[in-house]
Amino acid sequence: MTPKGNFEEGSNVLHVPSSPGKVCDLYGLTIQDLEKLLEKGRQKLLAERERRVKPNRDEKVLASWNGL
View 1 (spheres, rainbow, N blue to C red):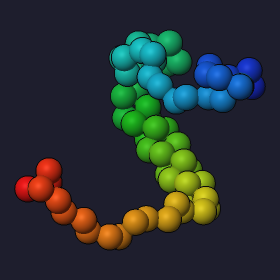
View 2 (spheres, rainbow, N blue to C red):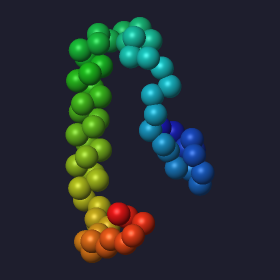
View 3 (cartoon, rainbow, N blue to C red):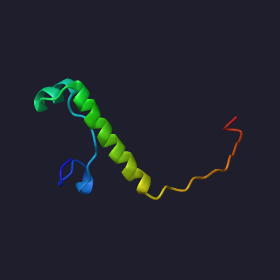
View 4 (cartoon, helix red, strand yellow):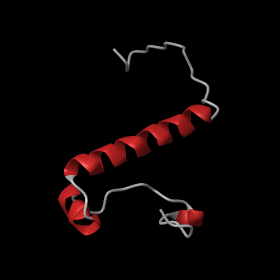
């Protein structure tokens, strides 16, 4: 992630541009260390998502001839 962003209006879209092996070689990590680091990041991301207001859901069940 960068302050400038990699998407429109300064937003960041998370992606993995390299293989795990290349990342480990670049930063001197083991695969296990990288997996732990990624899991820690996922947990932080999920915790932040839980703080958001969840969108409303339409619970109606509609069927028509097209659906049959």
